[in-house]
Length: 340
Image 1 (tube, rainbow, N blue to C red):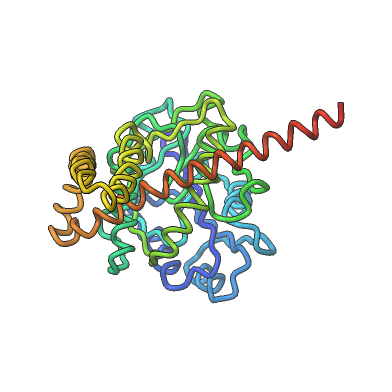
Image 2 (image 1 turned 45 degrees about the vertical axis):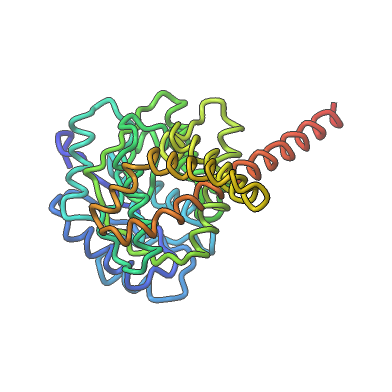
């Protein structure tokens, strides 16, 4: 290890990783960048994940239970010897140059505290929902603000000194896969660290999504806790999923539902509905074009209603998240008043 060549510690948390986990580790070991150590943290797997990690030459640690990826990553980071800690999810297959591009990002931007990339546009699972969800994520990160306000631990890296200075992931608050990486990013930014979003850093996602799983994840693992977090932190913003166009689209989607219901009584409301459909199509034109260019017309056409549903449950998540925050805030205030 030398100061001119950053030494990476690649940390992979795993729980029953299966075949995708083996692909993940093999891809890391086949990296064109060789100056790294590979640390796997098992989070109570009951399959062959530990045996797979051992066979592929990883250093193996354990949470000694089922404590979630935040706790697992913290354990891996505590054992890391590298200048830079690189987090890769167990269902992500890095490209051969992914680690090299991470090293290059720190080399070309000495001022940054962390960097993260995106999923590529070739998801491993071929069912429609998996393709939609993973391409959606890819689009968001490919078109996000380079000067990011959050962090992504699916394929991201952070300077070890920075990670230690902010006390790592909040494993107590996030005992399961949630927005623990987003929250970490906010604390890094609040401490003065810069986070780079570099879409050239890519990994293939192997997770198979179902419609029910998508709704559960977007509502309970992302939308609601993210809304609550933004209300709790004055410095928290969402510059990835809810830009101005997206916020307008949420309003337009709900207005469309109202217009369609009203049309059952007042047929003229269909004109309003048609105008709202046109507005949603225009606002999200680049998004739909992205799917059209990669998967064709029929795929892009099926994306449209699913995307509009996304806006509806984003609004629902914002509503529930706000209520959750108000209940918690009032409860905390009452406890403080009772103790004073």
